[in-house]
Image 1 (tube, rainbow, N blue to C red):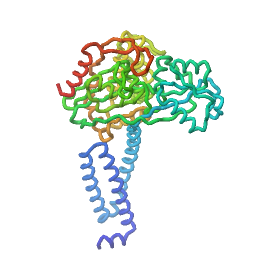
Image 2 (image 1 turned 45 degrees about the vertical axis):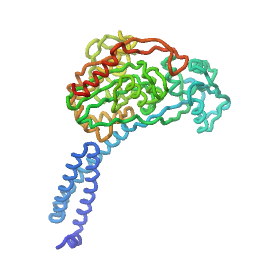
Image 3 (image 1 turned 180 degrees about the horizontal axis):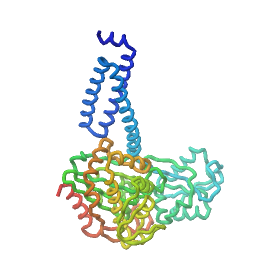
Image 4 (image 1 turned 60 degrees about the vertical axis):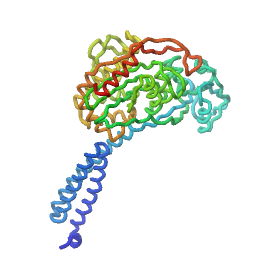
Length: 474
């Protein structure tokens, strides 16, 4: 009996053929998805396995129909489980791979104001920074979108005067842009608690440049950016770069280097054509601007970045079940106490540990030390259960608060590299940058007199030399 006659003779044969075809289609999907994360070798192995299993199942289907049903049911169950797991992984990787950044422009009023978005705005006054490029145009655009017209759009020469008039109710609205927020961080660090958002709109500013290498064979530098996203909760909105750490890895020598860069370091900001604080570079031009400022200052190349906001830090530590951090000092901050030595912290306490600086002996440098200690504590806790499933569960907890431009096809290689380097990552030396603070006028914003951090002689060369030594395998 030929195969055509075999199919015509049995309904069971038709059913097993249909299931076999469905399993093959599902198998192809699973193999392609695994190959996306695990590379060419995994793809070849997957295709070979698919062909072998498909051929054996087809033979059973043709020769042992009843046996093939049992085999196909088992294969179908395995494929369904694989598709569900891959679906979750794809969802996570899709979220953390969103690298297009935006400036969020907001129209705000006083927090205790009775003004509502549904009001008639014709009697209200809106204030904006006259030197704030695009503030008037963007706020006008937002008002038109919502069919609103204000009595007056009033320009201000300084953010100080703008904010003061809002606080004293001389104006009803204030336009918040990246410029305004950078100024307000110096005027009143708690300004966010005193205003409420009426309208907001995102304006795309682009993506950070990728300098891809084969991370399994070539050394690379990863920029770890901890952003104070005062513009909102969206990880892709620009914010002050409060944490700036370079992690350089050589997969061949198994050596790593971690270098913190103080956020107040005086750097050139290409997107503004002048120099200011490193933290403002990220605020004004996103991650790409921060990377360009760091590369210009230290004469190095940055291959990838990973960006996390403060909510993400809380979620990360909590997803790990808390971590152990080493504090160099005994102190208290915002209701949390730390002792010199090892401390157990949950997400909220870890955030305070990473942010505290004013009560510490070396201010920004001391905070940088603690930020690196926290990173090492995270690596150490992850080492207790270094599985791919656990890493994906952690990333899932960060899906709205973490992004990276590391290509998706490198995720599994990155995971394997982290596991391989865990002993070094847990014990790597902390590197700060010695220097002094100097007060002077800003080169980007006219009239702003602020303090900036200047590395002492030889420190920039030392940072570059340390990174090059790792890259060159010395």
